[in-house]
Length: 288
Image (cartoon, rainbow, N blue to C red; front, side, top):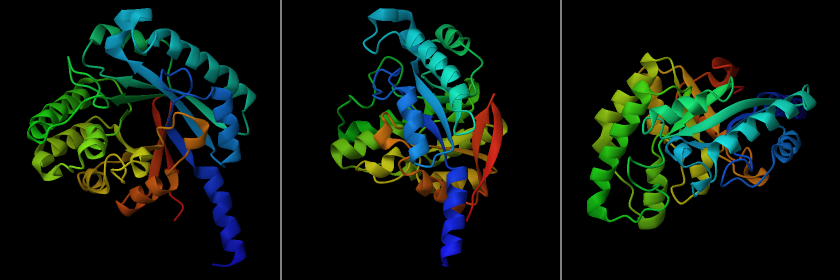
C-alpha cells in the first residue's frame, strides 16, 4: 500500500469510527466524566460517541436504596452532561444521548419512567439478569445448570426483542462472557439455534438493530458479543442494522476493538453499520 493510500485510509477511519456503547461516571460502574470521554474520543480519532449510561429498570423503584445508586438521578445527570457538552464539542465530535435500559420487561411502569426522561437518540436494550435472579456477573455456574439457565435467558431476550422499546439489542449472548470466564465451558450455540433465529427474525420484523459488542475481545471468551456466526445469521435472515460499541466504562477502553467489530460486520455481509440519532438509523459506510 502506498503512503498516499495509507494516509487516505487513516483520514477515512477518523471520519467513520463511532462508538455506540459508552458509560460515563453517571453509571454506577463508570469511571470517567463525559468531558474526559469527549477528550479521549478526539485523541483517538473517534468521530461520534453515544453515552449509554445504565438504567436497570427494576431498580428504579428502590431510588436511593438501590445498591447501584439512584439510576433516575444518574441518567438525568448523564443527559444534562451530554446536552451541555454536545454544543461545546460541536464540529469536533458528535455526542449523542443514549441509555442502556436493562431488564425493560421486568417492571414496565419503571421502564416508562426511564424512557420519559428525555428525547433520547438511542436506546440499547439489555438483559443482565433473569427475573428474580442476580446479574450473570455475580452468579456461580455448575455445568448441569448452564443449559436450563441459558434457555430461560434466551426466552427473556425474545420477550424483550418482541415487546420492549429499543433501537438495538445489546450483547445478545451476555451470560457467555461470564460462563467462559468462570468455568472454561463454552456453551454450544446450536442448542439455542431455534430461539436465536426467532429473536433475530423478531428484531428484523421490527426494523431494529443488534449490537456488535467488542468488550468480549478483551475477555477470556475472546470474541465479540454476539459472535461472528450470530451476526452472519442475522444478515442471512435479512437484518439491515448493526450497531458497534466498546461497552467502555472508562477513557482507556473507549473505542477498544471498534475496527475489529466493524470489520466483522463487513465479513458478515454488511456494507455499513448504524448510528442512531433521534431513534433514526444513520448508516455509516464501511470503508474497506
